[in-house]
Image (tube, rainbow, N blue to C red):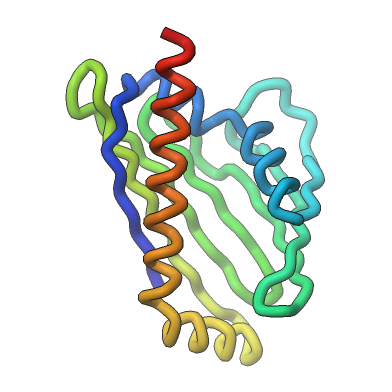
Length: 155
């Protein structure tokens, strides 16, 4: 099962990549939404090998997920691998320069179920695909607006 979203933002690609690779900001955002986040590596800079253990509630059940950066190509791409209770997910953030001051953010996520209970969960997600896609689009749009606001304060 795949989800995709795209957003054009008025931020140069280098600054957009710096913002998208500011993992501490995303950790704080997850904590504000009620997730439990633990950094599991000791890297001083963002890059391949950054890992987190994340606990959260989804559809009324406590879930646990391990998240790891698997590809880090400045300034174009960050790939993550997530493993959560029988579901493997690959997540890719891709940045494409549209002009000197405009960047396209493409987000792709692919889910694969490895157990029967995970297959049932993925099947229920397929039934709610439209709603989940709309929620992802809204989150990516909000992320883009936040990045534009942060960039305008820097400039």
